[in-house]
Length: 290
Image (cartoon, rainbow, N blue to C red; front, side, top):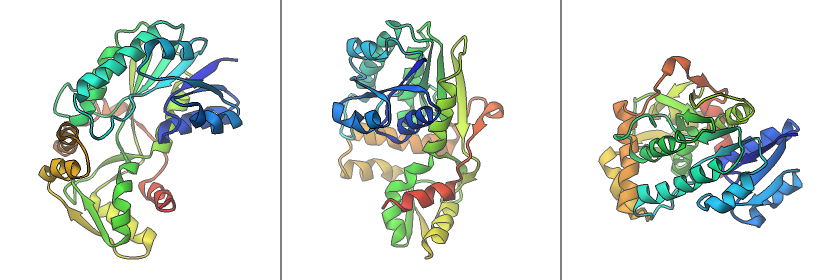
């Protein structure tokens, strides 16, 4: 039976990928940085491999013998400096590791807007990733989801007090996708056998503005939630105030600017896939956890 290697299982997407494959009776090898983080997966029937995604030798050893793999660029710590260079070192290691194996397919978690080399803020790291992975002979599927519904999570405590703060214009509608849908689509894609590199773009079933998200939260909470627009120019000072490096904060400000300007958009909207989980449904699940 083929083995499927899955990274990021301690996060939203990778965890759904691994569990979906296990539920299908597939043989799964989860990649974790520490043995303790793999225990719950071992109990579920997965093989556990301890791997640092930035160590090419160790990662190659963990990938060998697998049919296909799901990989992603781990989030950078907020205080990171030299962000693009640090990401490149990790990407170089992943590409070197994959090249030293007989993997038949890799699914890599990219982002909407990754086709652009600039004007997308932090998404530029995923543009760099796609360029690096395209040097491989192994076919790579680049999954480009849109804005995650889960990005609203940090705003929920204030929403419970009646205010939903957002750096988007209040009536600016844009696509969202639940990470559960992203994981489900990855689990489908990793089983496929493409002959060449390809891009798959993914949105949820609907778009929403900050005003509409506030209305959804009002219904879920049973009390009025007022949307409040914060200037995009305030992203950098707001994030540096809570410990982000100026470089990282500026990259996230660029993300918001890229979304609002339309720079961060699907390259091929006519072929984009759509998930099933609605925004309000996902918000409700998030509220149940706080």
